[in-house]
Every structure is written in C-alpha cells, then in structure tokens.
Length: 415
Image (cartoon, rainbow, N blue to C red; front, top):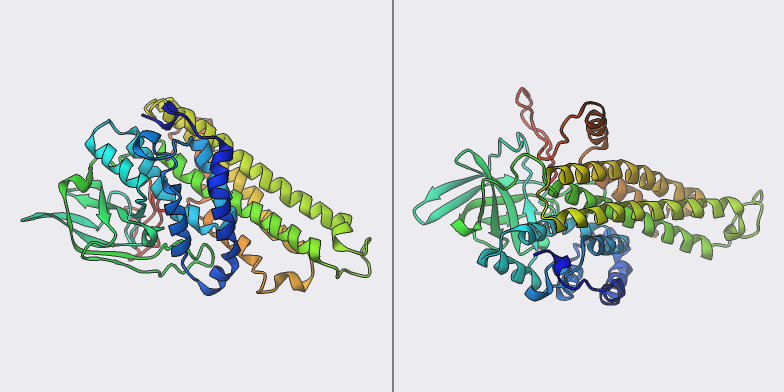
C-alpha cells in the first residue's frame, strides 16, 4: 500500500507541526557551524514529532504524506539546517522500499518501527577499491549465524540513526544488511573533513565481527543493477538540500541588507536597501530559490506517480531518472552562482566570520560534487542522442584496470 491509498494530510497541517521545529533548528545553525556541534538534540526534536514517519501510512502510525509533501518539508528543513535532510537521505529510501515491499510481517515490523521513531542511516561506500562489485566488507558464516567485517566511509547520518543500512559481499553477491547502530563491534567516527556539510556525520564506520541475523540480510536483489526509482529519489534529496540552501542564502542576505545603513559615496541611494543594484541582486537570489524549489517539487510529483504505480514499469523508471538528472544540472546551475552573488551586496563586512554567509556556498559546493554533474550531463546526452541506458546502479572507486592503491569513493546510495 502506498501513502496515497489513505487520506493525505493537508500541507497546512504539516506546516503547523514542523514549521516551529524548523524555526528552532534554524536559530542555532550558525553556532553549530562555528562549534562543529553535531545536531543530536535537533534530530531528537524531529524524531519526537514523527518527521521520519511522514511517508508511513496512517494505519501503521505514520502521517501518510505524499512524496511531494516530504520534499516540500525537506526543502524547508534544509533552509533551517542543510545538514539534516542529507543526514536522513537513505532513511527516506529505506521507508520507500518498505512501502513497495509485499505485505507481510517484516514490512509491517519496519513501518511500525519507523512510526515509533526509528531512523536508518547508511554505511555503503568504502575507501580504496570500493566499487559495487568489489566490496571488501563481507558477511561470513559462523556457528551462530553471520559475522560482518569491514570499513566504510561517507556513512552519512549514521551517528544519528538507530540502524545502519550496510552494503556487503556475501558469497560473491552484493547484499544489504541492517545493523543496529549500537551493536557490539560497531564503531563510528565523526571524521568527515569536507569544507562544507560538516554536520552530516559522514565519517568512518568500522564493523568487527558484528553478529547478523538472517532476517536482517535484505537479499541479493538489494542494489542490483537495472532501472530503479531509488537513484532518482536519492538524487532529489540532494537537490532539496540545494533548494533550501538557496532560500536561506536569500533570506540571510535580505535580512543583512535591510538592517544596513553603511553604503558608498558613489551609490545612487543613501541606504543599501534603496539602491536599485542591491535590489537587483536580491531579486536574482529570490528567483534562483523559487526556481530551485519548483524544479524539485516538479520531479517529486512525478515520483509520486511512479511510486503509486508500484515502481515496476521500466519506462516510468527511465523517465524519472532522466528527470532527476536534468533537474540536478539545472538546480546546481541556479544555486551555486546565487551563493556567490550574495557577496556583491556589501563590502568587506559581509565576509565577517560572525555572519558565516560563506557556509551557504561551502555547503552548496560540497553537496553539488556528489554524483558529479559532468558525468550526469554526459549520460543525459548519450541517452537522448544514442538511446544509451542511464546509469542506475553505480559507484566510485578503482576501475578494473586501475593501479592506484587507494581512491576516494562515493556512491549514489551513500551520498
């Protein structure tokens, strides 16, 4: 059953619940950035309000929200704190997988767990070789079941999560494994060293002889090649983050200009907010934020239709993957220039560390390099010109003929 089979909540009701929480989260954003304080408390506010259960049907204790409503709220959350939607990224895909699964006790167990507050993080990408068919994280048989051993990086959001969705090799096949975050043998580190998105908890996770039950192995089909809704869905979370960054950049810039009295002797107005050149910059920032939001929600509505039909039609899956890839290029091209343009509003004072307006560019730049846009642009062109298949299942690491000892890695599912 998909969420649309039950009554969908009104946007206004969702705003009434989550809007005040987002405002509370936004008030501490600069301080968290300065102190590098991971937002555990803020995640707790979202958990308590049922944010992670937005898509869970009402009958299982969730809100029964549509995909469009989820992404609308993700943009709003990103405007408050851009790290949090990214940290929850794989959680949303996990919930969708449960919604698409055949009815049964396991499906109901996980949907009810999510409704009760369970959050799912990920540990999929590995350093070094890393590619989807060469995972060195392995499940091996033991007298009492299975043991998981390996090291992962870019474990986005797992420090905030109750369970970690892990990719591993089992008898030569890639499988998904659900591991309790507090299980014996699990060690997590906040060692992500990117200059942006510093609070996503995207660091290293180590698994040392972690006991795994048969029911927590998602099977060889998990992450299998071929058309899927999930790459578009996961990409769209990143684009929602960018749209939220654009909205916060515009509102921060507007607030700064509105209160400013210092200008230049050669300006055409006494106050910056009355200067037509400054007004033009604010107008362009506003336009970028509007267009980014509209683009994300347009793809989200298309995803709603695909998921309502069960995400089984290959033509639907190709169409939504193409839409998400096209949206990626468009949104990046809107948001990155906007987060640089805002500095034209003032002189040296606008780069004050106390404002931390640079965080908008750093965060946008960081999330924009995930799933590199140049590779997406080429894939789109090859598909449209030559009918080439779009890349659904892929990862980064050493190619088969590579000789380098190590390589930084990132995967669609992990980032």
